[in-house]
Image 1 (cartoon, one colour):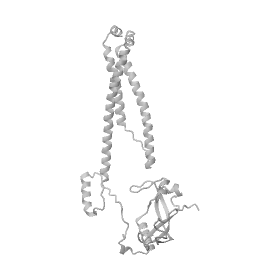
Image 2: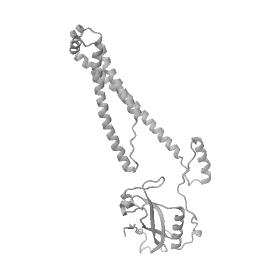
Image 3: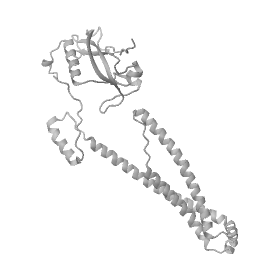
Image 4: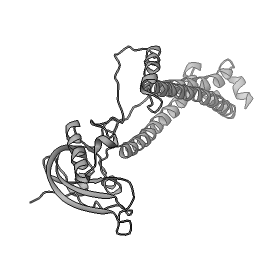
Length: 319
């Protein structure tokens, strides 16, 4: 009929004939709605509205010869296939469904119905054992109003700890977000410093190379001056040459860096199952390009300036 059946649930190895564990299985006839992991779609073809067989395992105690285990079969109707949900582990990869039991999200009412059904199946007294009469909470997310300061958050934490006890941990998620933001800011500052040092080293390298080039081509400079090229035009020749090299390096380096960034971002999105998002640090990139152009212009202008004040005959005799 096209309905997918969730199978492959087997009793754990400690429940066998040697331990004397009694077990049975029956169909309860109960049906409920739930949000299931998106990994069940490639694994068993789960889809919203398509019923699945859900196996609920109930046992009266851990270990012992008088241990009893019941396998309750129920109908589960998926309302949505979830790949991400805050506070819960969901995935759309088929491998996660094969490794462990996929997570299922149900309402408090449905949880209480399943709990009561499991208690009745193994015939235990929930009141005598001190079992909870309502669904317990593993995690509670509290949203504070906008504009709450760090001091106010600390006061709330200090007020909650004596009430909830030491077994419950209170975590200030806003603090960790701010800490991450500050770490990113320090990392960008480090990148700016490294870029400035790199630009300074490139300046000295370009300066020495241009100066050596000027000394080796004094004859050509003298001939160009004799042909009518003035000092400004001669300076522009060297500056344009340096800027052309820098611009070519910026274009090629930017293209290669963009491709590498896209590849790494796509790989990270593949692993984390988050939407692909490429954030380009425009300020950092613009500052690097401007520093490169300034360094190239100064590195080409300063060596040429030393021969501009010489006469044509002096330049030709120097060769």
